[in-house]
Image (cartoon, rainbow, N blue to C red; front, side):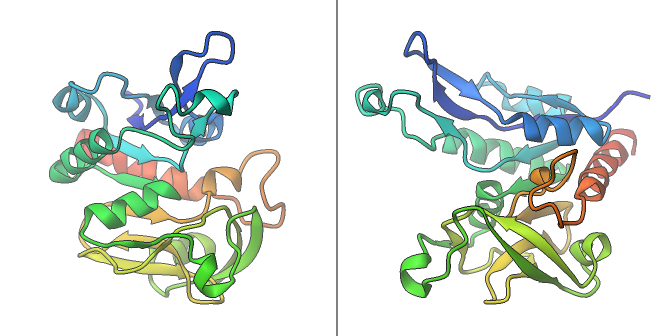
Length: 235
């Protein structure tokens, strides 16, 4: 049986030696997809949307990624620190959504899902609330009864937190299935499509060195995603 192929969006970077543009992807996402039984694939050619949709069984939109080893070059080379091709990512999202293939969004990917479904964000909510979720904090969350998050993590669990934006108006068809103690959304699920987003980083709560150490492993979340992709391939 062929393993499901999972498209994973990339971020921009600068090559440290040659100051040239490059593409990057955290190995944590690759490890999580591979461990769950999937084959990761980066969509590097932006004019091949239809081919990617035919080839892949699902798509993972990861957290914000970007690497500039020499920040003074960022402006001159027009490379933002946390940049990726937003229009390209939107086209991929809508193409996969149209086919009903599973979509998993993490951190910035979760925000992307909400915006693509007609929702919006509050930028730097720390200024309004004084609540810090950006610098690798750890906090408890409550999962909505009957949700995928509750099935995997139970009523309450502990997660990491690395986000400065938060979901505001919720996109159509989405429901919030995980909340911080302050009521900040930490996970969303689509009511009719296999689309799930986590504002936190489940790829970091698995493996030999989970962050935080007391967090429940997220292997089951990635296994659910890969299984849904496998069902899509053979249905």
